[in-house]
Image 1 (cartoon, rainbow, N blue to C red):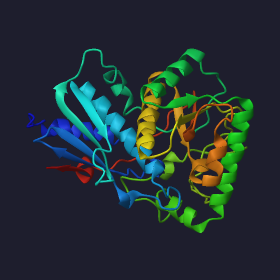
Image 2 (tube, one colour; image 1 turned 90 degrees about the vertical axis):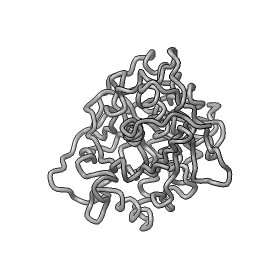
Image 3 (cartoon, rainbow, N blue to C red; image 1 turned 180 degrees about the vertical axis):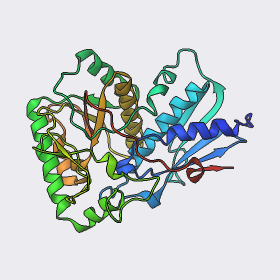
Length: 327
């Protein structure tokens, strides 16, 4: 079936919005291919941006690509196109993660477009949050956002938050003693020898050091002193949310990535700031302990810190021409 080709400017805009998604260490592990004849955009995982030590199964890579896919869907709806997405469309191409048809007009009742203003406002905040409670109605809305994408969002109680913090600290200790994990971290951060321009996490996005380590915020300085970086007291009672899925394979990871981005965009529109915590998820022997034993959540895919506080700075993105191919 031949579809009316999309304007080059529109395709570029859609992909630019897609790449505003978060990914582990801002590695941006995605590639896009626009097929003008079919009216589709294909999303591929980029194995050159995989992290074999921290993410040996590619779970985090799939989450990042799922988040980019969700942004693409939101951008398409905003542009008046219905994003008909098929996940893992070809078993013979494992790096082909999704194909999105864009040849139909969007439905009037589609709710995706309403999230579009948050795409470029959403930034990870590694700054202190206040101890102000998040209203229950806002949390209910975030839970509903996750369910729309086939995932669950669980708000752990006080005892569980303490256990999560212990697991995060355990993971950080393990990483500090693992030279391969440290090397991988340094590759993608703004420390000497770290990431190049357009990718990774620059030093200005690290946030301050914590006086007392009370919030699960990763210190990307990895013990190094950075000129001009200050310190601060973080919230004593961090508000955390666990995003999870019933199963734990590539399809679930892509769904979780989409759910994650829907939650983050909704949180941004609700006036919240967020950061992501994946340290304990990177160690198989710690990840299983993150879930609440009385919860029906099967597998935790991400730990989200949310609340009120300063917005985080933008992190760099690669140019669209570096990630988009046209057939």
